[in-house]
Image 1 (tube, rainbow, N blue to C red):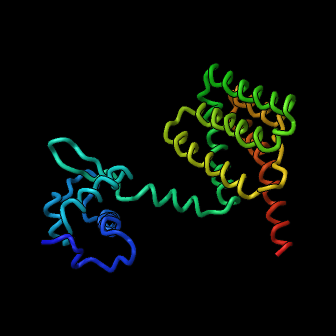
Image 2: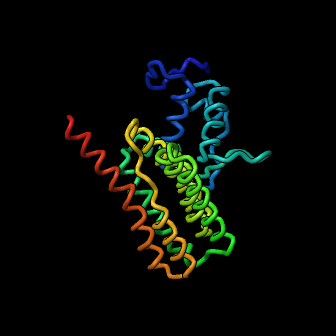
Image 3: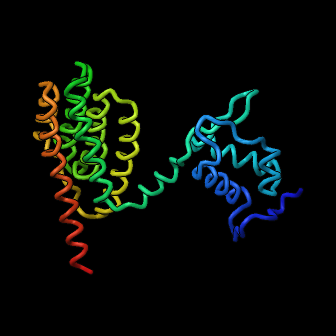
Length: 243
């Protein structure tokens, strides 16, 4: 056996490790090894793929880091997931700003509903503190308000809302989308003026959550999200008109 990649598909400029990762990923996605089962040893995989054991070891390390595999000391390597989270995230990164905002809205409205039912007094204090910091930027540094307060401090507030739902899975997904929205909006608006965050609609959302009424919280959240959505739609229309 050798590490020259005999039997593997032509990799072009891609490394042998990348090609091995893809082959293992495809086998995992195809159900070659069910979730919870142990994958073959490095030696067996090296024989099957006709690559060196070091190549297999590095490919497994990458897939462990990606969350598809898990290594247990003294036991071996087991299947944790047959889908690659990194591939999902790459797909999100390639999506347009409208697509990302729509997914963010879905996450936030559900987060607001759950927050109305599960919030603690500390959650409400955290939301109001984030709003206070945002309002301070508007009052003391208006030249920074359009970009910094809207994107950075506004995201802090919305993250507090979602985390008040006390659903770790929802919070983790939202943290990723929140960063994606920040990047997408900054890139999309460029030198254009960022849409300003209207403090009153944010306060209305906090009040709705504090009331414990999930329907009211959802309505308030949708009203709040209508502002940046409208600004993005206007920007996209302007861009399309220039083409």
